[in-house]
Structures are given as structure tokens and as C-alpha cells.
Length: 193
Image (cartoon, rainbow, N blue to C red):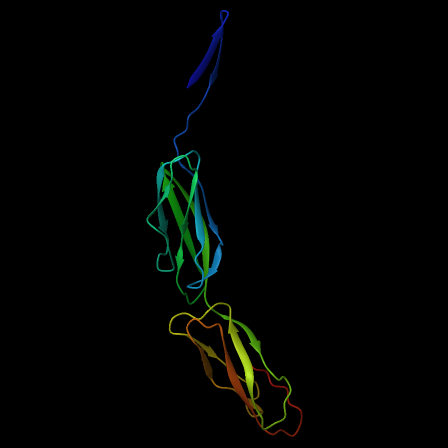
């Protein structure tokens, strides 16, 4: 578009380029979550004011789903939406796309599994023949539906034994477990894992 200004026999002009409204950016916050425990927020940004209906998609909707569309209101330049994550067995990368005006922008989300985050033994020194019950295993997020089964092991089961597994109930993030010790002839370090 050429814009002109005239006065006193002089005319000056300038050129203005008007671009169509398109998606200019897509961002996710956070970009890494524990599946099923946290749902990140996405933000779609346009290069000009709305209204606009932006199409959304996920490369793996079973792991992280998005609404089909998000609406940018009149006079606004951005809108937010919520992704819904699901539990995964291993870290999974999902690509989220936003399309409008013939332009598509993408952002990457990493969905991580629920995993063991801490193991606490209490006490850490005990006499043989005792049973300690204040030992705790913790997760990095609440256990999903159905609970989380954690495998335990002892490096010296003849000195200290643990249950083969413990179950952390759905919604809980830790559980106590017992260690059974046995009489030994000498001080015996035992690794519980």
C-alpha cells in the first residue's frame, strides 16, 4: 500500500506492507513434565490482533493431548490452552503444533515417567536380629491410578533382607517398608536399592 502526503505542490509517499494474520509463536510451560502428574500450559501468539481460531494438534495424543482449537479474542494477540499428559513407561517427546493463516508453529514437550526419587533408611546402623520399619521409598510425583510397584533388593540378604516389592498407592508419593536384620559375626555394610 502506498501512502502519500501532498502540500504546496510537493508530494511524498511511503510504502506500507500489510501482512495477513498468522501464528507467530507457540510456547509451552513447562516443557518437561511427569506424565499424569502435571498438565502444562501452551500459549499461541499471532503477529496481529484477533479474532482468530487456531488449530492445535499433538504428535502423540495418547501421551499429551490438546484441544482441537484455541480462540484468540478480538483485539488480543495471544491465547492460552492446557495440555493433558498421561503416565508413560519411558521419557517420551511430543510435538505440539498450532496452525492459522497458512503458517504452523511447533513446540516440544518431554513427558517423563514416574520414578523413584529418594530412598531413606532409618536407622542406618542397627544390631542384628532387629526389624526396622521407618525406611521410606519416594517417587518424583504421585503414583498413577493402580499404584506404583517399586522393586527392592539387598546386597547382603543374609545380613539384612527386604521385601521384593512395595506398592505405593495411587495418589501417594512414598511408602514405608521394613528391613529384617540377622545376627552377624562382624559389622556388615549392606546396600539397599
